[in-house]
Amino acid sequence: MVFARVGERFRFELAEAEGAGPVSCAVGKDAEGEKSSLPLGLVFNAEEARLEGVPLRAGFYEFVALREQSGAIQEQVVLIDIQGQAFASGGVDYATYVSGGVR
Image (cartoon, rainbow, N blue to C red; front, side, top):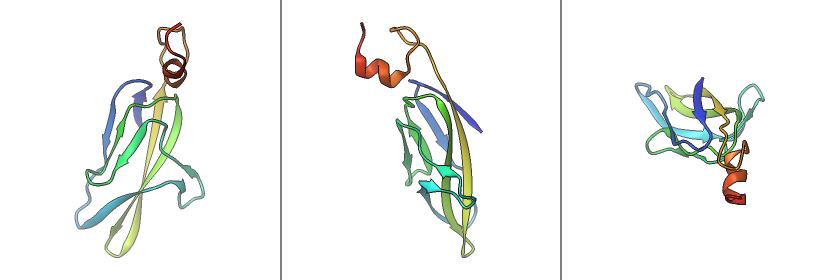
């Protein structure tokens, strides 16, 4: 499990596997039928095999990366726990703060 905080820059590099092909992002459902998605504000950089960005909303997310290795598709599950943070407008999430401006 990796941790992030709303409004703070986040970067997570996926582990490299010897003899493995390129990594892709599986958005939708993983092999067990669980929801897989990227948190709002994060993007998957396939060229660098990493997640990066600034999370905009607190929550618990499951991200699935797929990679071909020895002729089989390997699934790497990354659990991301994004913690909330109070901002100047008094305890709202970052996306609400940015869209509403300072009051």
